[in-house]
Length: 139
Length: 247
Image 1 (cartoon, chains in turn brown, yellow):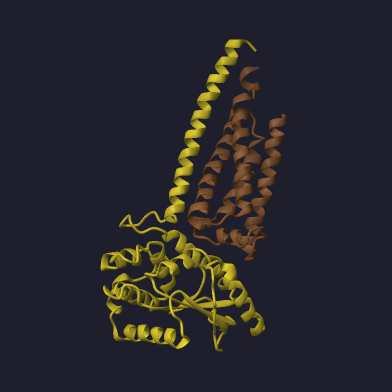
Image 2 (cartoon, rainbow over the protein chains, first blue to last red; image 1 turned 90 degrees about the vertical axis):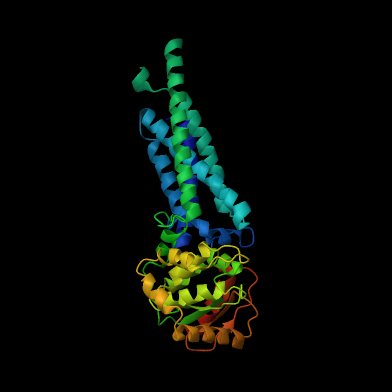
């Protein structure tokens, strides 16, 4: 496994931890640990914390699991799939960060951390797509 | 690997990347539209948004008239609100969903909505909205109607609560007989309920909406002095009431 794969795996695992925590506190009905006063609570309880009734944290959880699973899919399907999921995650995270800043007027550190991880995943997965040799096609 | 083969691979990967970026952009746009509209696709009018979000929020929670939640819940949380009030909307979109998940869905708290009608007195917009909401309450659909109204609320300076707007909102609430609701909204019974809600608001000494009170069910409710509309602002008073109720 290449260093790039390992880096993506580690980052996705970190993101998975954050998403799992936010999903847990959503369904357990408890308040998130938050450094700033009430920012996490405000974001987590906002209209934008769900997409079509599904908590955004849960969607993130699925996304990180998908990234991890696609790392083990060989060939260009795996490379493209990882990049696709990471880019979708990056794009939606960027939108949610915009919403936090300009709609909710509160910042959730967990969400920001996840957005940063998604950004890293997007960059690394694109580099991986462009640089990884497909041994099946070019052997 | 020869240089030519390498170039072929690089070109192919660039094309693949372009396709991936385009697909990702499409998915993100769809997600943003769904987020903005609350997934309210399927609106006959094409104007009302948030139906699926609202229906998911209240799915499985009992409703009876003005009350949301377990009728035997140990604690009662009353909200005095006006459907045209923008701050009431802010509460509904910020703290309310978490409070429902945390306290109402778990059967600990029942919520009661006492609708006021003083925003836009000059055009009776607020009263039209409240009357239709109370007519929905008679079919145990008050909370879906109110939530959907807030999501689609317009400027409080605008006059927009006409029959078309009310019908568009009501038709997005599954199980609500819109014709029956229109027939009931101007009944003397609903006029009486409006007057009763106003009397309760005045008796409690509230000055504006939204106002809240919480306490042991069947006992005296205590007004909540709030500074923000986050769920955390209300958790303390609710937990205190739950503690004193022995729940």
